[in-house]
Image 1 (spheres, rainbow, N blue to C red):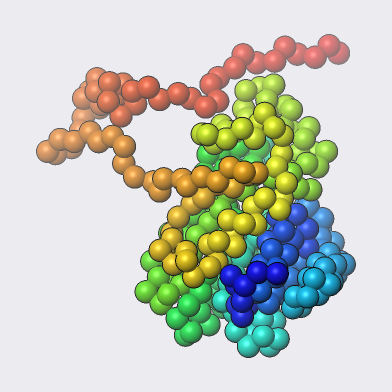
Image 2: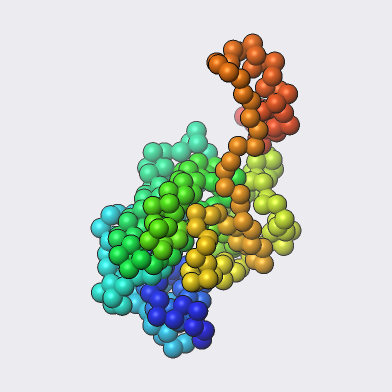
Length: 317
């Protein structure tokens, strides 16, 4: 047992399995008191079970740590409030919030149903707000806090068939930028991590089949520069936890409003969006000017990540 998070109270959503479980266990091993939140549903968000959260709480207690379970859904305002209230009721404060809960409803945009769009945004984007809002009220008053949310390369880079997931995850990035500015002066940092790991969300039969089709069509997401994940295969979910725990420490007080990538032994810091080229004139551009100048300036060297393909031949009757 370490003491880098001694006497801190952490809430980890989606902590019954995978990445969230690894985070909860490591935080507890570093001295944090942990609220293990998990609805216990399927990857699609259907169903519920108390077993995943209870099992993690049992693991933490067996190693001498303190933890309580919470089974609320992050997708509702009331659920988010109850999750944070669980920390206050049991441990009298909240110092760390890890927004990790997630589901998938993958579909190409032209086949995506409105309910599939809504369900994913409700858990990921709304869920991040639903927990962050009540946590921020406490953290602001105590003038200390750490909020770490999970984004994804599906948002930061893009991944075919995940318009709902990518939109939610990039929304979390914007949310992080703003909250970092809103809360920084109160001693609260807000950061986000794009994890790469083999979990039930990334290794299900449906997801793996879709990944094969994307690769065959040249639509796979671009790998993060400097990583070897595609060669080595999916990393362990527990590999993400050390970076999350570091961002929750006192030493990480200067890190605020940043995007990280974590997969296996690869940790990366993404650059925050900034202009990389500028085309300027005094007054309004004309179409003739843009037709002449764009290919040589702002659009120079740009590559279409999904170039047009010939239509597939019709299948025999």
